Image (cartoon, rainbow, N blue to C red; front, top):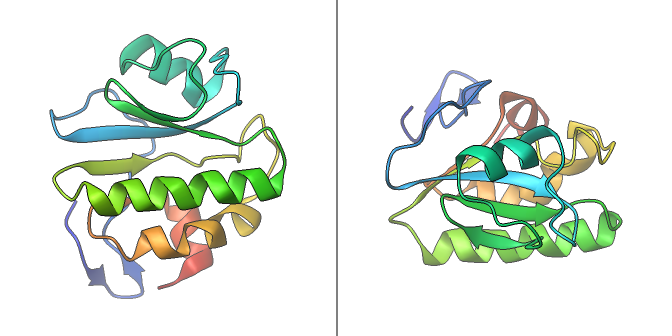
Length: 136
């Protein structure tokens, strides 16, 4: 994966399944504010990439959690905080899973626009479903 665009979609697209991470890669996943990583990408982050039980937001090991179960407004604020963090850490590559589009019940059309500012950062990689909505 490289930065930039090829044709109509950017090339900073995450793989559909992430099995391992390079030392500078961060697995970004949706969680709840209590950090109960029971299922989905949150469970993968907990089992494989250092997410901490009881920590619902921020960097944890090689993962970064974004709370998505506490309403759309709170999700948007958490994504804004993530975007600022990614901007402050260009040495890291953030692999954003389809945050909020699993157990939280949102669609890419609802969540992807919240990542518009993050999409301009060369170190943020998004799922293709988000890029199709953003078409930056």
